[in-house]
Image (cartoon, rainbow, N blue to C red):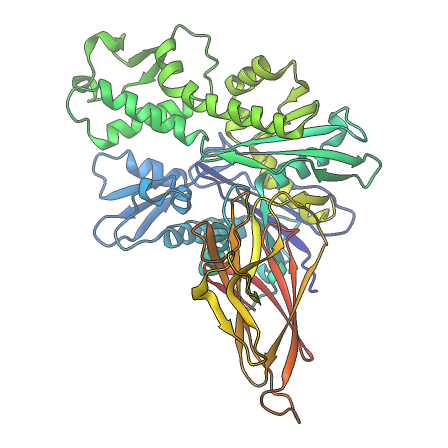
Length: 544
């Protein structure tokens, strides 16, 4: 396996994106942050996940904070694109420029984001002697994402020229966001009074998703190890949905149709000033009113002519609490699933830095949890933790599967259980079912990180074939791949090599070795004297 001396993490977020880096080995064990972003003025360690396209030809004009500033100009000639990460899970709710797909806009952002990172790294004394070909990347993804969405992120990374299609698979590692957060908390371990047998929950609250997983500390003596206690879960209740609620509330109060640039200025005031400083204890909160916007705002909502006021109760009931209630429900479900006292909750992610969210969790769960804490620089916990995870790949020893995986097999037909239209008779006269779902790994099953599950088959020489990988999210496992809950996840190509002195029709053994311990499903295929490695990089296809 090829080694890469530099580890570089990309935390591609719904609202903000960040990056950290470190050396793979040597005396320098520090994790460094990229904090210089175009037009950011240094007020935040991450850059907005925004794109600004020209209307007439969809040319990308700006990104990050620059895209936001473009959208605030009265003479704008383009479209601001935000929350486009959500297009992978809620495509109907995220309008994209005509002719652009989710993978197009994501790769557009990753390309300019990565180019900026490489420029910054070449300016550092630590990395200026390293070439980009020497970087290993770790890209964080929500744990609740499907395998299909994760595959699109790998494909987008290739399209953005971060990696090449023929690079070794491990040059880009996808890491679940709560797993990265756990690695960060372990990296800061001395700050927390936890030991063998203690459990802690990660609440990774970001812009789009909130992911939760509970871990048990197996061994507190260095190098420490963790194992998943629960099957992680989460929901679409990140801070972007607070923004959406605010947009609806603001729009409902305006007189007529406010120009887009002015409306976006007011939303920018909410996102930059009101939301991060909302504690739920002020009687009123105000939004800055841009010049020229006064005719669109009812006079009784103005305070001294330069601020539009909102009562606390209105913001709480219509903007913040509908989202926070969902987070509280997720934590309740995770505690119930853990089935025991949880020693600590670590609140991470950009939304996880919200003091209001912290207070709500303290009010609801302080009697069930030993400690609720916000690790330092929580907005960078995912990016830093991803680097820490690569440096400590054996930190988490086992995981609990969220889905059931299997393959299509031809098993002996069972009357009354298998459909007649699936029946066929083999050459040796045995009646078989052609649509049986042969389970490889079950939802809720504990899998060790390095565990391999093997399946053996045979192919008639010199035929090529493919093994179809199927998945279901159902608790009750279907018998047939034709069940509506079963999805074909991928087609695994099995290419027969040229074998000397082998007659056509000869059965050749093939073994597929499945690995479910990492964020992506990985496979090794052993056929004759050949071995090929596979990982999902786009829906319905695997790459060698």
